Image (cartoon, rainbow, N blue to C red; front, side, top):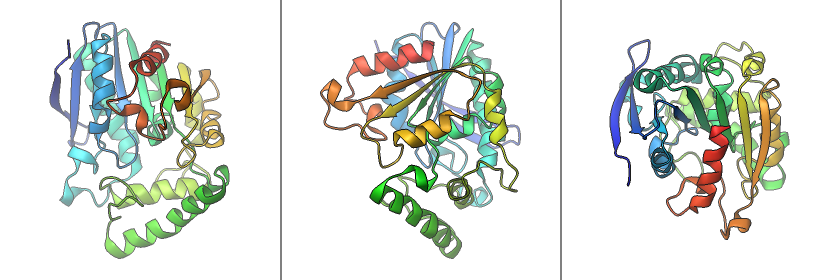
Amino acid sequence: MAIARQRITIEAADGRQLSARWWEGADFRERSMLFLPGLAAPQEYLQFFAGYLAQAGWGVLTFDYRSAGSSRMEGDDATVTIDDWIERDLPAAAAEVRRRANPRHLAIFAHSIGGQILGQSPIRHEVDSAVLFCAQRGIPSLYRGWNRMRVELAYLLFPAMIISLGRLPVSRHTFPAPCSGRAIRQWVRWGRHGRFTDWSGRSREEFFGDYRGRLTAVTVTDDEDYAPPQAVEALTRLYANAELRRERLDPAAWGLESMGHFGFFRRQTPREIWGLAEHWLRG
């Protein structure tokens, strides 16, 4: 029987309202988890896997970072940086899970940039287990051939477009949904300079080592465009004190033609793959 999701609002410490969804699985007080979505990727793409986890007993919370998805507010988003997500949005989302469930086991499922910001956020001290799914470093030298050229071209053009237009247009060559231009420029700087820094330029690299929980780093074999193995490994190395395991998903082994960066979250994904991921979340 499907678990009904609740549309809720989270309030961050500065008063900003964030759009969220909550599934109250049967064992939510024993184990609950929080999704950290990708860059400019509205939380709705997570709903099918989130519903599956709720049926497996988990309490599940998804949300949109400020300036993205249903948390977007046109007039208030011009100054939003990734620092706001790290210092305000993630703590507010984790606190909401604690308020609703106070679970014995708190897990994180971090997709793409979610794995980059988890290690920088204060919530890194609160988490029992985490799955980093196609979470990578965006340094161009970690990509090969056309994909490296594509990354370098994005780093060249995106900031120029944001400065000239005031935003990055949505397209299949940019991102699937609107997002703060400042946040995207900060993300570009991380890749171009090869270092995680706050908006003022101070390094955040040392924070990743504070995470000491269980960590599963997942690579998808046909995700060369966004998260090739060497880029995933480069991020994983920053979590130097985690209880680490590495996993590799090959779509062909599951009878799939492709999976890529987002295919895991599709409704049609074999439930055996989702069951494997649920096992990783349990640690």
